[in-house]
Length: 584
Ligand SMILES: [Fe+2]
Image 1 (cartoon, protein in one colour):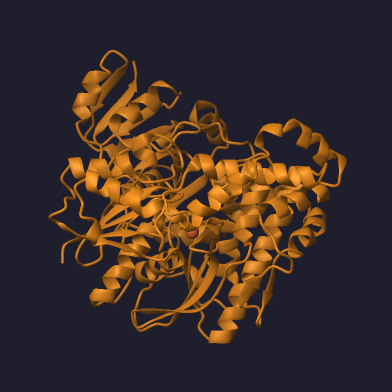
Image 2 (image 1 turned 90 degrees about the horizontal axis):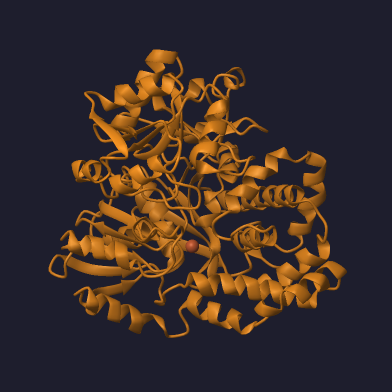
């Protein structure tokens, strides 16, 4: 058997190459190559890279997988036009004056025909997919008869099960939940003895749809800025949380012993927007966010508990965009019913390339335990000397003996350090190789990073990366996460009360939770060495870690882009492998 090439043409355009034994070799997202954040559609530039570098070719690729059962290429433009059109429809139908007022302003985006276009793309029923994809594959010299399509929610479930399960003899309940794919929005499967068996599914207007709609309604970008609502929620007085939560509860409920979602009334974005416009004409955005987050936590926890009770399996694995919500994951990990939990890293549609490949592998080969060891699966900075030469009059570069020790010293001295070394991380979270690092002890670090480069919303916290072996001195780790912890930043934790003043920069300032990355020596030796050195210097086994990108741009991919950010920000030091770079 040759290599598996796995492609996601939907939201979070991505491509991955997997070995004969199912292990990922290289996985990359289109946004890193076309420099458009959160790209949709066929990953043409990323696949070009793989072909140009001779990592894949028709001769060595045995299968070409797609992450939807009916092929289609998503379009970002059509996607957002669909939201605009649905919202325009809602305003048109609105009973209150605010809706009527805005409706008059939005005359250009009332064309509800766009809704039909979007549905065609989303479910691949418009027939635009296969032919177009086949044409692209042929242009890349790939045989179209190698194409296999794996159903969307099977991809999410297979990512979690075949990627994360520690032992095939253990029984797992695998949950998927998102804004929709191949006509479904949630599934529950049993994972046992290398087989995934779906037990139930739903196709209703999901919590993922509601969350994206509210994100749009509040003026943010859907399928991108949902985390900002989650970050706002802890600032809200609980009495307003309770006031706003019931609004959402009327649209989504659970049936069959709390195991399956359904909508009491027929819903789509236009209808839901209409209810939002009518109910919240002048309401505060933080209160709405907090009500939604509380409802999300309540109904998903109830769903997970209902299924654990029904199937008597209390090891839980999760995939799908809704589980990017680390505060929800925190509550799931704290449920007494949950003995073990893990969530696939960056579990939106971008990581469905893993599920498609893992599932296909499992149908032909013996599988015994999780295939995902690490997530640094991208490109490495090469030709650093060429980049240094290119920018010779703008930067000062020097070679250093021990980059990891140097970084720790700089951090302890209060410097903001950007690191572009080793293989790039896949997905939404930078885990150290494409990261901006800082001292977590002083809150001024947050302000400096925000002013220098990130320009984040003022309420959004930064995240800490801590030594795995000392993590429980800083955060409360529930029993369900004791073994695997949080190497991919998929869970939030309560900070130990006596550490709130020690690592304030890495905590949410309202509730003192931390979206922690627990760094083990075996998985991330360089990052582990940096934090160990910082610990030796300061007595704090933790540093602040945020993704290395300018506001609004994707994470940097190569040395040129890293230098570009250095020149267009006030980052103190840039480390690219064993070179230290500063502005001239
Ligand atoms: Fe999905």
